[in-house]
Length: 281
Image: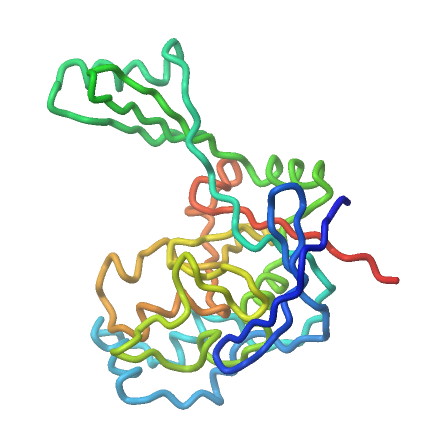
């Protein structure tokens, strides 16, 4: 593998410091995440919530206790041996590509745009792709498509690059960097700064831009196991208070939903973050 070392940068996150070793593989940025025997998951029994956090769940008139909800949504406490990894700093998102006018998947969209001059674009979600047609200022049409890939196709493509998907345990470790609190930054959020250290420019302790959006779903090698958010469901429905609705930003949070994550179109909802396992010497 032709990884190129670039530099080491001292990084502080939530009161902790780490020397981030940066690498490039082609144009893609990677960071070195040290391996260790790590304690993962969340100790629900040891967590003492505030009254505001308890009330955050009950805004949904839930019959569950907050501890029950956390036990359902978070991975359990466990110990795992994590190898040293080079991890892509950012996830790979599916990109839109220019389509061909003669592709029949665009026929229905063209007809709809031609019959409705006031409509600027139209899109369709298919089993294997999302297609869209945009109307340009000059009245011409631009067909674009975003192809979905199966889990086997993702794994095969990464293998051809000498890379792989992280396991669910590895993902949780590199996201939280050993943090045992609810969120990577602590146990709470505040009204002044409800989501500290999230967003497109945020970097967790190991230097990764990860769990920066509740829509930042990521594939892991464990089938039908998704990390990095809930697809925006909690905030979209507005059914819970601020603490519970932001739990998808936690490194402990996971989704296991075979209806959301179909084998035929794994990248329909989730992105890919490549890793390289550093050989032991």
